[in-house]
Image 1 (cartoon, rainbow, N blue to C red):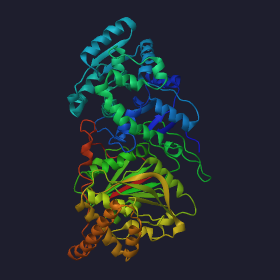
Image 2 (cartoon, helix red, strand yellow):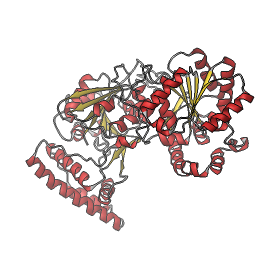
Image 3 (tube, one colour):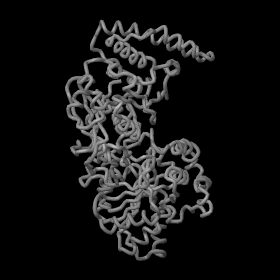
Image 4 (cartoon, rainbow, N blue to C red):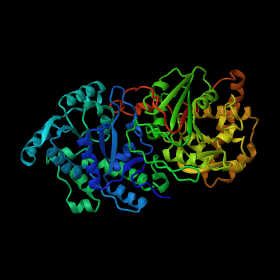
Length: 598
């Protein structure tokens, strides 16, 4: 499989693969021609992967729709700035790629700006740093036209209203090239939300470059950079500020990058060739652009009062939606919270609302308005990687398969001891290798969907669909695992187990308790395994009793866990999250329908 040599994904972060002169040429051409959306240039290093990569709290946030930016969002150019990323890009593509650090690019860019008479602005840093810059430029580049210096406090950057006023002030200064040094992730998020409001043609998210230009911080010698040790140099200079970045966050981000396989590195804009489907061109336009062509498929997500998690789910697939390569349809069923408004913050997301609080009804509505096949039905609290979406769709183009689901992994972070014990035991129970339930999502092609037509009013839709197909017609595809966040407390777990038990009873698909218990007992290898079995047995038995009682008391009751949902979107600092946007009406390539009820 050949990895596209224009744009790839490393650790969940998109990277544009360019030589130095190509990158400078693209920036120079935009400054000269001033056509299209503002060009925002970001440096992708391990710190960037930590903030914006797979599983990060801010994953996909750069592609939300700014509410007050009338001219639309910016177009991102993301360049490799880190030896580990450059090395892994070489492994994946078979050719060497240079590190394009902002500190290396800024010199040629400013010289070009001086030659063209481009008006330059500097956002970020301190007043003292700006004074040093004035002195440096007076000696080194006296003809460069500096439109202004701005040193906003964090309070200003954190306030959407004051940030908008700051952007308006920058626009009044007629800035063409804006160097933004607010530090990651603030600078990228500020550009995504307010970049177009500044009126700048090119915005450079180059972090510490202002300090380098002002000679406040000395760059590492070339021989240190050549060996990929610039991080050690900077750590030695600023240990207090950078220790956490390089010694705590960095190793995890490095592993995320190194685990990027050729399949996972495929950018969503690069299609996998198949006999029946010609390859699609790599998308390099603005996130607001739409593309017409052969669709990848449809993803359907129903959501009932999922305001606390919908941003997290959509963030994981934001780039597919923003580039118009999937049609994201969030079907809000009986919602009384802000689920619909939050979903509309994402470019490419279409929201439908129905009054009935019913997951099957929501999925049926999604089917009614979707256009493309295959279709992935995804719970609103599940995070799935874009490459996993594309791999599932590709697998369903096979004539022999009718249903596919991706692999999944339980996330028990913050869970209590009984909950962790339950899921450890559950993972040791042999299950059908082709079962469609458990991952929080499954996909069907048109032929498979025709087996039953409409989703019936049942609690366990995944178990129902699983029973429609033979083992030869369905597949669990090995992909980047979807993240299934488990309940954090025993009460939440019991709620989920009670509902699951009721779903089994509705389908008259009672399983052999003795067989499962014997499988669990045979897996015991140490005292902790035995304790896991005890917790599993006690919680399962309690859920069965509660299911009988709940069915008699309220047959329509939908038990749910709230501990894994509570205020997930609040974990993103308000200063970094763009305000609400407007619903999208573009015509994308494929469809994504989101439904959440777990």
